[in-house]
Amino acid sequence: MLTASVWGGAGEHGRSCYYIENEELSVLLDCGGKKENGGEYPFLDSTIIAGLSAVFLSHAHEDHCVAIPLLYQLGYKGPIWTTRATVDQLPAYYQAWRQYVERKSEIVPYTTAEVESIPYRYLEDAAPAGTWFQIERNIRVCWGPSGHMLGSVWLKLELAGKSVYYSGDYSPEPCLLKVQPPASIVSHAYSPDLAIIDAAYGLDTDTQQNLLSKLIVKIRQVSEREGHVLLPLPLFGRGQDILLLLTEQLPELPLAVEIEILDGFLRFESWPDWLQDGAQARMKRTLHGHITTVFNEADRRRMLAKKPHVILTSDGMLQTPIARWYYEQLCSDARHCVILTGHMSEKIEEGGGAASGCEVEFLRYKIHQGLHDVCAMLDSIRPKSTILAHGKKRNTDLLLEQLLNSGYRGLHSLIPGQSITI
Ligand SMILES: [Zn+2]
Ligand SMILES: [Zn+2]
Figure 1 (cartoon, protein in one colour):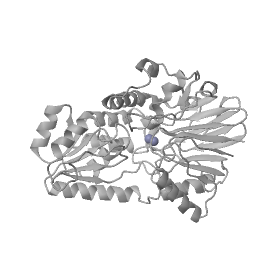
Figure 2: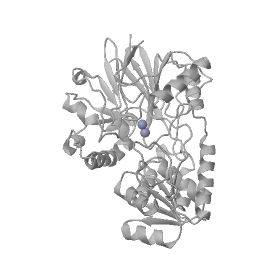
Figure 3: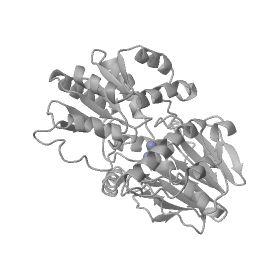
């Protein structure tokens, strides 16, 4: 028997955390925060944290990592299994989380010293991608790159005879990063008892290529009417892909890149094992292109006054002071456009999108899975039971209905606090 409990991250976007137990052991997959109401955390059951057999972290985004220090407050003493590239990016996410919580006049429930004392073990030191290894008695693990961000992984676990697949956040169509499918459809050798899979985009069937074409068309339109385009992006992840794609596909347009986004791009060069073949050559060409690097407010003012630019800034949710500053400069002029490419936790304030204000567009850049991607994953691994994760409850219900109509079985659309037993 195997029980999987959602402590966060299914039926919602944020605070991903899954607790899995059987008669012999228990593991936790991710432990993140949700950027709502000044920070929400998973439902951590304090009576069982100290006894966890292992904890895994799939990647560095705050919705997967920022509640990890709470585990140590509740008595967990073991390591966090993850990758070196993930640990390299964690300080930036913990810092951004602290800034977010404090901006909302709330208190982070742990100290910076507690964050810095977290012990890590590295998956890639234990075994290369796609290779099984043992971490504890009765726990075997296999990992692979999930294409979602630098260092992001999916995990296959064998827990005392039961098998579990966790996709983490999975991007089947990355531009620079490597992605390794969890199984080959041809072999049909792998069929886990339970899968927890990224279904963040629900019924959406857009391909990356299609979405990218829409983004390029919109940027051209705004530039033709002499407007600035503001692209708020996460520190690491789709921002680096978008920077590269814009220099390749719109080489004629002036591009202004905040130093944080460029730093994220340069960081990719330190991790060649996570990149696709040819990615480094493409990145070099981007860096030799016409990019204006923006370091401070004087640079920002000079650049805005000069001519229309495409501006890449952090963060993706338009909440950092720099992103807000840009928004305030642009929001009252209808020529300009803010393009949001990912999840927004809180609404843009009044002004944007109004008749007299700048245009606000939502054009997704794919870093999660939509309907066809979920089907492809189910076809390749053929799980006996599946939790559809990372999407709002209503969207997940609609996806589940569609999948049932297509003949898939053993699917679950859950919310935090719910469990299934297999
Ligand atoms: Zn993520
Ligand atoms: Zn996530």
